[in-house]
Amino acid sequence: MSDSELHDDAKLSHVSDDGKASMVDVGAKEPTRRTALAEAWVHVGQRIAQLLQETGAVAKGNVLETARVAGILAAKRTGDLIPMCHPLGLDVVEIDAELVGDRVHIVARAICHGKTGVEMEAMTGVSVAALTVYDMVKSAGKGVEIGPIRLLEKTGGKSGRWLRAENNDGNG
Image 1 (cartoon, rainbow, N blue to C red):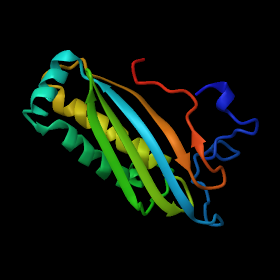
Image 2 (cartoon, rainbow, N blue to C red; image 1 turned 180 degrees about the horizontal axis):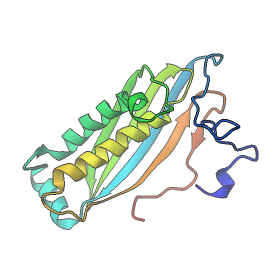
Image 3 (cartoon, rainbow, N blue to C red; image 1 turned 90 degrees about the vertical axis):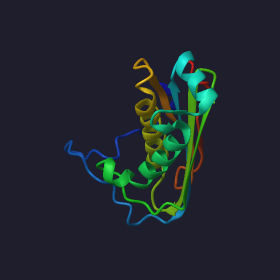
Image 4 (cartoon, one colour; image 1 turned 90 degrees about the horizontal axis):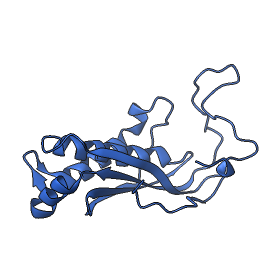
C-alpha cells in the first residue's frame, strides 16, 4: 500500500489505546450490503503449468477445482482463523481459479448483508486456495511461489466503495 492510500486520521481499529488486541464493537452499526473482491497469484512455472494445461490434475486430483472448493470453505471459516474477525453469515462466496501462462490466477468474491465488511473472507479464500494449489503441485516442484495476494475492491458500510488504484497482473 502506498502512503497516498492512507487517510490522515488512519489508526489501527483492532488495537486499543493501551496497545492490546481488541475486537471492534459493531453493535451500533446498521447492516448494509457488503462485497469484497480479492486475488492471489501462484507462480507454478512452465513444467507444472504444462501438466495442468494437459490434464488439469496431478496425483492428488484436479488442482484448480480442489483449490476453488478449499477457498470457499476457508472463507466461511474466517472468523475461526483470524483472531479479531467477526463470524459472518455470508450470502455467497465465489472463487475462480484459472491457469494464465505459468501462473494460476485466483479471484474470490464474498458478499453478505451485515455490520462489518467481508474483505477478510475474500482474502482468506484466495490465500487458502493458493496454498491448496501449492500443496497439490509440490510433488512436481517445490519452487512454486505465491503472491501477490491483495484486495481489489470493497463496497458497503460507512466508507462505501474502495477500488485498488493500480493494476498489476501478478508478474512482480
